[in-house]
Length: 374
Ligand SMILES: NC(=O)c1ccc[n+]([C@@H]2O[C@H](COP(=O)([O-])OP(=O)(O)OC[C@H]3O[C@@H](n4cnc5c(N)ncnc54)[C@H](OP(=O)(O)O)[C@@H]3O)[C@@H](O)[C@H]2O)c1
Image (tube, rainbow, N blue to C red; front, side):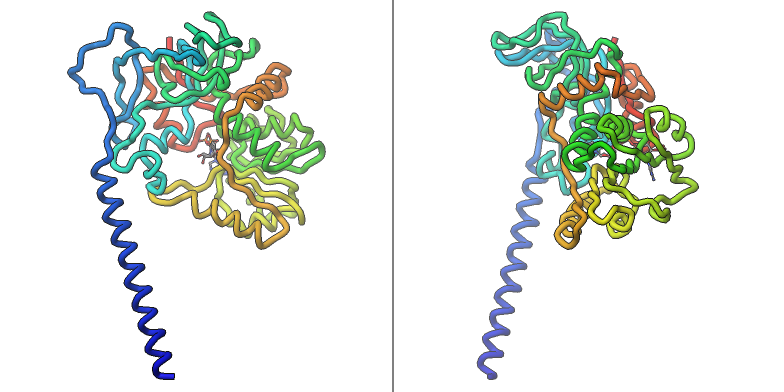
């Protein structure tokens, strides 16, 4: 008996030492990765390129004032890419997360100490300048919108599959507001939420960039939509099609008797257990956004959705949207038909892009925040 207890104690000590060793290796290799991380930020004194453009880059993590407005060489498209002269870009929460390097848990992919990718921006609209040899769908002069890394610039190269012709009925600024926000709303409502005609859908955060698309897409699918927003945005959310609006400054929707087949949540300000009580018995919760923090948020809530899904009959999903050509096409068709109209809050000048980022960071945007490039 005493021998067995001794063996257990020795085993526990070994496991303890192993865990300590692994933690030490983790801390040391994390530290090395942190100090070795670098990027190829241009030196301010370098010669100006001949085919130049103005663009925003970030060499360090920090507030909007840390963004650098630079003269850079114009990108050159390869055979399957398109060079677009950018006329408008939109800013997304993903841009300010990238700018600040938060949450820290994402640093292994973003760059530990400094951003590994210095180019900024994704969503844009503009006019095709040149096309690669293998490009068949676009020609110089076409008005397009799409997504590509480094969109906060006068010129951007994009894969053909991430571009769409701009619907004629909307402006360049509206077109630039589509890619990330509208794709996220589409995939959240249609795929994760499986919304169909007659579904009772609650959109929490209905007045923001993703929310304004989610309300309209759910309506286009025939749902009965309730939008949650503050009083100042209630009229706008009703105008884009919401059947009911709940002003969260006066009414807590989790305390009301209504139950929903699908909740699309951009805010994540109520516990998941409470969300389950607001769902119909087999209802679905879709987490698109959640509380943001310096270290981990919103990942713990995203992980908790999986646990709640395993434990109950009400599916709870978190997902990261993917920009695909078929979905860009679905959005183009929804906009062409007039079922969806992008809502643009403010449009800034290109030299004011840091101000646009600062405004988005306040969390007070109504619809999308756009920057136009003359
Ligand atoms: N999973 C993905 O792939 C994915 C993709 C895109 C975005 N996201 C995330 O989705 C979230 C929303 O993105 P977004 O572009 O829509 O952001 P946004 O435009 O900054 O959203 C701002 C909106 O949030 C609303 N809001 C703030 N507090 C609220 C509350 N307590 N209840 C209801 N609404 C509230 C504000 O409305 P009021 O002014 O009326 O308060 C404002 O209209 C972010 O966390 C973002 O990171 C995730």
